[in-house]
Image 1 (cartoon, rainbow, N blue to C red):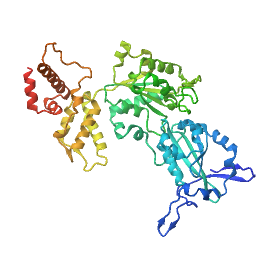
Image 2: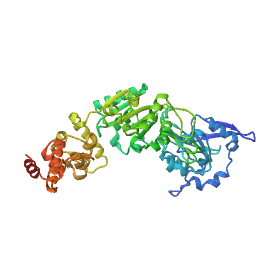
Image 3: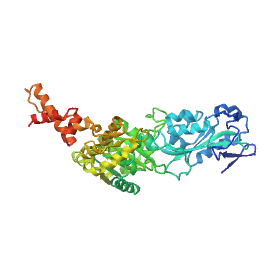
Image 4: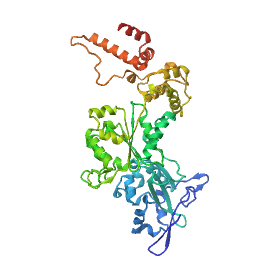
Length: 500
């Protein structure tokens, strides 16, 4: 759709976004004898400046037009420099207008994220593009770049628009998307395994969130709490609202308010002069995932309770109260009932985050899932692998018989070790239990209750017996324990008999 403006000279000018990335323009690469000569925006700046540029571009009212748009927007010169920007785009990029106007778009690709990098590359080629992905400010967005052309087809600039992915309907022709889960979570490993028991929990949690309830996932380390949170919060779905992952163990008391609430631009606390977008604002209208929520200090827990009770907060350096329109998914591997009873975790915070609580069972109690989980992760490991790996019946028998003190993470570790060591078929000899998990020595454990007069030899013997006992218990068989400890089965049996 063409947008018409009236120039100072009274002549009608038309803002004409490109209708296609493939159209032939005066800046398209000329072909000479089969050789394609590429010209980018910086090479044709002088040529573009000689063309008839609509005067409304330099009209002060054009800035008001951008500001009135419902989405973030910027007017770009054909050489890549940012001419105008509205406040909505400043908020999305977490950058002040003074840092944006006059600078090249490509300059902000590193600080803003790969979405901006893709837009900058498209501008270099004078190509219309639409992309979706995650900004470094943790907002999931859909952005488009349209090339502006004169009546004779000459490019004189570009219009960039950007919006949060879940705020409006998304265009059906978004191409070359950046996927949230690939950028934020590293690999396909974090995708939810499609098994009925797991999907049932995800569906119940998703329904609770859609109805405004907060959700709590508990369970041992490695049981898949993060994966379920991603699935319940629809992380990676461009149609879904924002999903912000907060690793609570990384937030000290000094950092909590600045990271969670943000910092007001220009305030005494603002060392960057452009402020800081907090997790609550980044998650506005979406999901705030509090990973290992029990790692929050008592002081931080108190501040979080106040936010959840009043649904408001203030940036550091500002007295203005802002709405906290978020739903919370919390997760922990600790026993919250014990923590509340001991006073280590606030009871009022527990009742706020545990409106719907789900306890994920350990893998040792779900032996029927082992084969399906192994099949799922084997497909991931075989992506691009030559030759493709198969699991022998003997290897699968060991997988099913193992106790998995490390739960799903341990299963994945065993499969990854087999994929690294085996060629085409993982045999029984490739079943290697990760020793630290199998032994599982507590950090502050004192396994030896030796008398002050005990000699070193006796203490070493006591410690060795304790390690063997723990390994057998964790591996559920002496043979597996021997392999995990790096000794032969005969040695383990002999040392066990010495204790009897």
